[in-house]
Amino acid sequence: MTDMHYIYGLADGNTVTARQLYAERYPGRHLPSGKTFACIHQRLLGTGAFQKRVSDFGRSPEVRTCALEKRVRRTVD
Image (tube, rainbow, N blue to C red; front, side):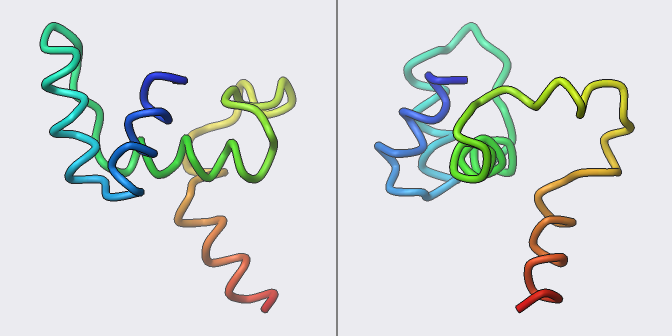
């Protein structure tokens, strides 16, 4: 994940550019979606860690997503 976050930074937060750079740098690896780059960055900003908290394991992916977090933040604001 640190590789992906580094490349996302090189791309100045542009997910399309991040995917291109990642594909060039790691041609044999699975190419993550642009959303994956953005979610990793948001998780690092929000929790200070790349990994999900232990309490998050076992939950379905629909419970906590970047889109859900954005909706919650908009509602709170």
